[in-house]
Length: 434
Image (tube, rainbow, N blue to C red):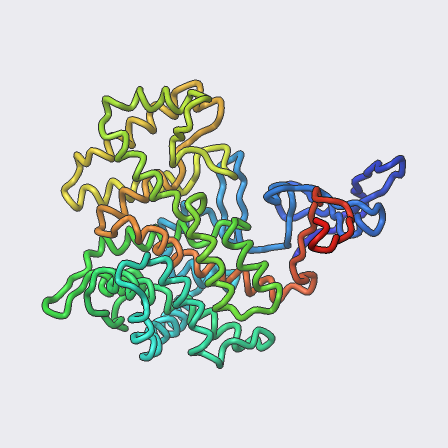
């Protein structure tokens, strides 16, 4: 880990009349951080930071975000370039290994992932334990967590070879499990993976093929899905990634850690945001009703919120949204739904948001969720599958972050502190005296 400790830089805290110096650390790019590791020992105080929005909980070489500039880098490479020039499996290799692969390295990596796409045959029967109307994300949480019961030879986190094997298995098997969850919800038979297909095409076939007829994967749709996977592959220390790291800090096996990440991703404020954006567009219903909803969004007393606008980190245009907008148009043109009503509403909302003083002042720019819901629906996925697709893409980011955490000598088991506001010490009275 290349973190620069700058002894010439120090932060000075004055607490209860006592001055305490804290070292300031500098990364490659981005803001400096005040190292408060010794704060409690030196002052008897903790910091208070709900949501950890001002706290760096780790050192990382994987992903960098500059929310003010609208920048997203994977291992230093801009997301716009990666989505245009690379495949999702190339990005997986990059996130795991730190560099983009050459042709020989990529061929070997692709063969490795392809050879791990099947799941243990007993897992087929595992699915019958779920209700037919179970949410696909509920199935994902349970099934991914159960992988540790099937693959004992890759759960020893102290063995580098097992860590690599677990990483490859997770990336390879996640689309298979996701497709099985989709097929189970439809009451259709599972479709086995095919080794001659690329990652996204294989996933499309497992989701939409039927045993009774041939299925041809459209390369434009496959490439669009591959690009969506790239855009969602990692996003620094978000809620689900932090969950994976926190679970992993206890020494839990990687399958259990990723299952925890999936559970966190399921929340509507995280992975469910594209579903919420699509529901909002459907609620608006027509371009003519947009002014009404713009007024509602500006009304402080109205609980309505414009979903798909603004971001916790980005205070500029989400760089993924530009790529997603182009992809959305490609898919809608291909499907012959150029006049898709929801797209018209989305385009007009975007135009207003980029010009209206209220939105510009508050920097409420369209984010990636704004377009991804329309795109996924046009491809043929129901709303319940949106977050599942997010989980398929984010698996490599979770695994890369987990692997980095395990190999970081500074990492310890996560143990946040609290500001206690309950009762002071009091005595227990006998039951008859209460």
